[in-house]
Image 1 (cartoon, rainbow, N blue to C red):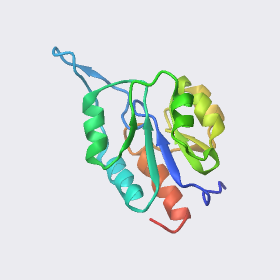
Image 2 (cartoon, rainbow, N blue to C red):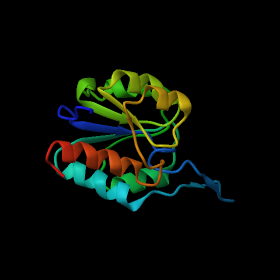
Image 3 (cartoon, helix red, strand yellow):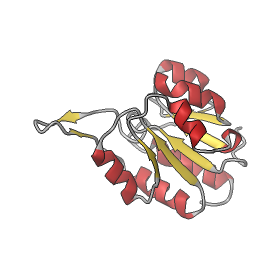
Image 4 (cartoon, rainbow, N blue to C red):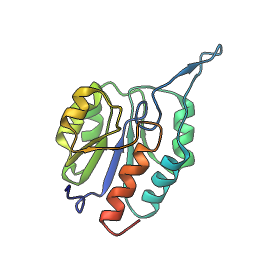
Length: 157
């Protein structure tokens, strides 16, 4: 059984974690994503209970930023080429972080955090290093599942 007692921060990728990875390319050039409402509830709940929630994504899309800001997330890093560099600049204590990623660009940061987590449908390499593999796929409540599991283990849900 995993020890979640030291976790104080959640770090999430976006595409494939908070979304199912599907992009709808509109004729305007906008690329639309779908977020699960229960993930949003859990993110806001974690913030209100004193956890840090940090978003680090390789893609830059204003709609994603607006969605996350509507959940009161303030630490949003989009369009990131080097996730490890951004993670280091956040000043997080890696031993108090659970990072949920789904693909190769997440691996370096995941290896440095106390707990590496992923959705059920993550890339094989990511599943291979993850201590926590959600039962749910990305964009379908995997982030909520992780947050709820950690907070319940700490008696804070």
